[in-house]
Length: 560
Image (cartoon, rainbow, N blue to C red; front, side, top):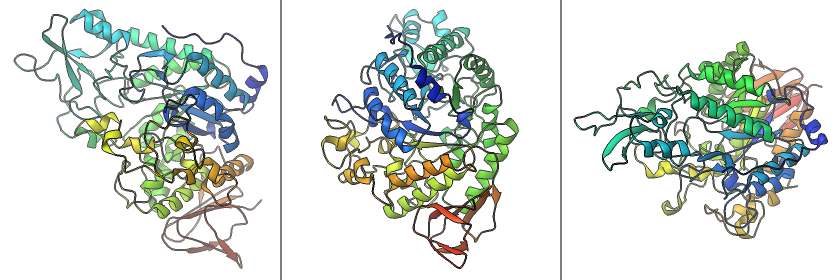
């Protein structure tokens, strides 16, 4: 049974605080909290909602506009909460619905908005619907809410088609029927504990419209939609006709991803969201072959934002960056949606480590690389990202310059993809290690009872305590950058940049009186001084109207 929130109304002042900015989502800086790794309030080694609530003033002072919370729903945790057993309850490891209610209220009082994850492509195998489907057997109406099929082969011993799980192995698991015989197979594009819903069944749509209203009534300001490109499957579930299908993702429309039918679902959802005041939003996690197809998700009557994974995967290279920036802005302009920019999240190697390694290794890397180089590039990449038109996302700990933890012992790993062959690399644990708050103490201030993943020695020197007030620290760079971004009229929302002539390997553009120059090369370059320096990710020198910009450094100027 779901826990019930407090019925007390939110303070009037809180509602006014978060409603002051019209179209806030067009230029918002949104901070991703991975709850199990952010702050632990009860000393059990696992982060929780109360821990997040106590750290909200830190996020306000950092200068972000909204907080996106990764899943905290009731779950067996087969995939870190992306296997949901009850969409209207908080998992006890994270707290209660009362804790969620208090977090939302406190965030609003501080001027922060709250975005929660929604997982509509699949449920947990412990979800009541799925348990009922197993118990009722073949032909039951409950099985129609998922994708159950008889197997191929003489005795049904082969999967119904050749689809492969994103986590490795077949995307099908055979069940044992109530009478003990081998029976039908069910579809799971991720782990076997995550059966895919059949969105052709009307009950599925009814349930999720109810779930939306439940959380909107709780006061959340929006939803990040997990696997937003999933849900609808091609009619007949046709074979793909190839192996190593994971390598095809992002290159073509698949029979199980980015099907056009998802857009009818989002148009229904948008009508619900628009019934509520306060400019609530949808954000799509949509892995599509092109940014142009991503734009389909953010047409005026669908979702508000979509993650820009093409940008996340771009190398630290001036020509590549200019190309993806242009394509992004060109794709979003016709649909009137803001571009989004992101460098890290809970599924990819932190950009301070990606940029520490040679280009071409992908977004999951197990190599530490050149730590100093990675941090220098990460700082420069952040200033470039925050200067672009639209909305930006910050993943917890990137404001501390945290690297990925690439040397976790195999015995402590918990990423389900790590335990399955031929799927994802399974090294996502490295970006999920709990973040450090203090120089010393149990788990560097994360909590009093250690941390669910081991933190590296020396983590305290990267902590919030160690970097606060320290000139030149990455944390202070983020704080200043976000303050300047908010106070500079030419930054934030928009749909275009004016490219400036620049030396090879340098990205330079103007937005009104503001100019951004990013040197992606390994050598210092000389560029015109474009006015008064607002901020730089490294030390620059100016003389006689010219500026010397060091390697892997970004500079902000203003003519105002």
